[in-house]
Image 1 (cartoon, rainbow, N blue to C red):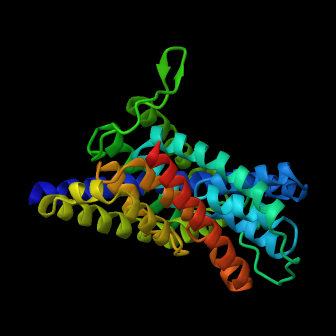
Image 2 (cartoon, helix red, strand yellow; image 1 turned 180 degrees about the vertical axis):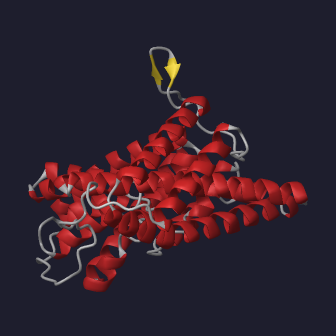
Amino acid sequence: MLKQITEILSGTVLITGLVTVMMMLIECFNVWSKGRLASSVKRKGLLQIVICTILGAIPGCMGGFAVVSMYTHGLVSFGALIAMMIATSGDESFVMLAMMPRQAVFIMLGISLLAIVAGLLTDRIYKPSRVVACCNNNFTTHSEDGIHGERHFGWKRAAILLGVGLFLAALCFGLLGEGHEEENVEAEFLLGGINLLSEDWMNVLFAVFGLSVLVMAVFASDHFVEEHLWHHVVREHLPKIFLWTAGTLTLVSVLMSHIDISSWVSENIFLMIVIAAAVGVIPESGPHLAFVMMFASGIVPLPVLVASCISQDGHAALPLLAEDRKSFLIAKSINFIVAVAAGTVLYLV
């Protein structure tokens, strides 16, 4: 029992730490780019759908918020909205990259290609009347958002530096176990004979990410540290990620210890695909995490995870639900159908 609890806590801290570090880097990129990628999305046709797909594929909900905001202002097509919603998996993308980077890369690339095709087909088949709504833009930058600016060494900056520093030390000394095995995908990403997605190289990559966050936390402005790193990442996202991860790991551990869930799942793959797609309809980051954990533990096969990833879009759809419920329901219905179809085809193949 003690070993089980230790493994759950170790896995929870590892996943939460990796996700938090990646979120902080995304915040930095968002402010540094000043929304340049989002502003270029106003172009019509294939390019617009491709850019919205890229925004959706960016881990987290920022890119999704940008596309939803532009859709509600009539700047992008409904097909571009669909492409974003298929391509995005919300905050769970961070968890997938942290737990199973190799599989995550191939899944995200495959889903992105599907998102582009679905977006183009949607624009050909369905053309809703232009949406005119006054909504909050969730992907904005302000004049004081620069990385450089007034800087003081306050307790929030110190807490971030201490937390990231301790996490990096634990990671480097091997104190945190990953709690999963990368056996589900045998393909490798080779460059010069080196597998860049191996566990060793990914540890190096995450170490570089962590050091980058430390440097950023030292030299960034007070506004960036307090508003973007502390309030948005640490206060808003970190507790939820930790609790959802701990709860899911505990549930998976209990199920594997007391129930032969693998046998049941193997006999009900199609039902699991439908359930995963249905759970993904919920506009919330968290429920999808259960399927990520079950896939990493070998309980559910790839088609189930793919269906969940396609249907799930984290918090990105929440602004759409608030501003245009009809578009939300239609978009979610399309996502559900595409998710079930893609999962079923992948299972049959």
